[in-house]
Picture 1 (cartoon, rainbow, N blue to C red):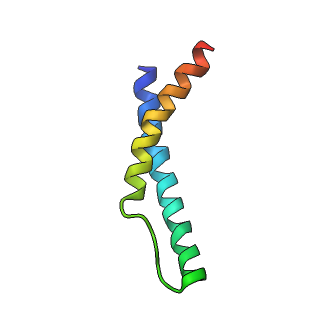
Picture 2 (spheres, helix red, strand yellow):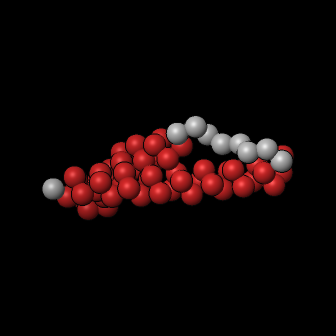
Picture 3 (cartoon, rainbow, N blue to C red):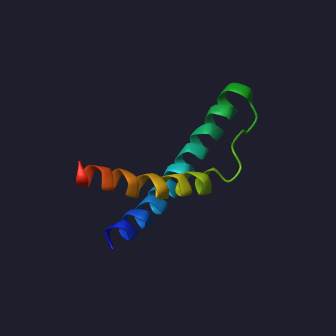
Length: 64
């Protein structure tokens, strides 16, 4: 159950992180290059990465 909650938290947190990063990259691109730049589907990529990392780090912290 703890692993499932960690996966859900990782998905939600990673998605929010991806939206924030995408916005930051877009603003930076507009400021420096006068054109919007970005990575397509960045929130989904970060959500998947965080859904994998959060349970791993939680397990490592719990046992170590």
